Figure (cartoon, rainbow, N blue to C red):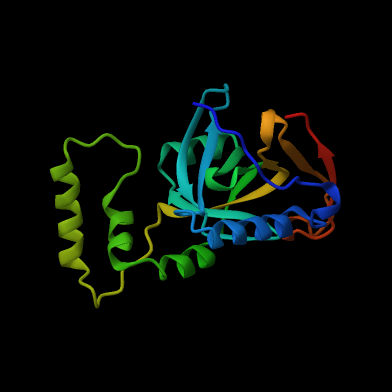
Length: 217
């Protein structure tokens, strides 16, 4: 099960000055290529004693401050983030022979930001956020559907669904962002941005510098 990747080299001179700009370029390429759910990413977390876990989550926003996803704050991923905020993100864009790996620190988004996003979700997804105690054991699928049906009766389509207090976003502020481009003979390109500088506006992506290093494949 081998495939030779035949792609254009990824060179330092072609990179954007900052990783979020480079991410935007590659994300646009992934969308244009018709990749299914290009915003799907693997979020890896770990307990304080180093036991890892990972899952697919959808990226919902990104800017100079970092990458945002939403989840239930009672979930396993949230429990691990709250005790160990170091996380890793991975975008696996196989049809383009590309992947992006991010390491960084996750912090909760503000409630206003969470509420603004929650209002954009489909009505059914809003109800689902209430119905599911994510990562908690449940007796059967029928019990989950019964919870959902009860909520649908309480909040019909024309009824405003309140934002669940146990649900919200995380923003991952990157420390490193690695761009991987596959090539023949496994001589892949790996260019990694490494964060330097923590100015007063670092949380907003200001006062931060980046150096780029090439890694052996």
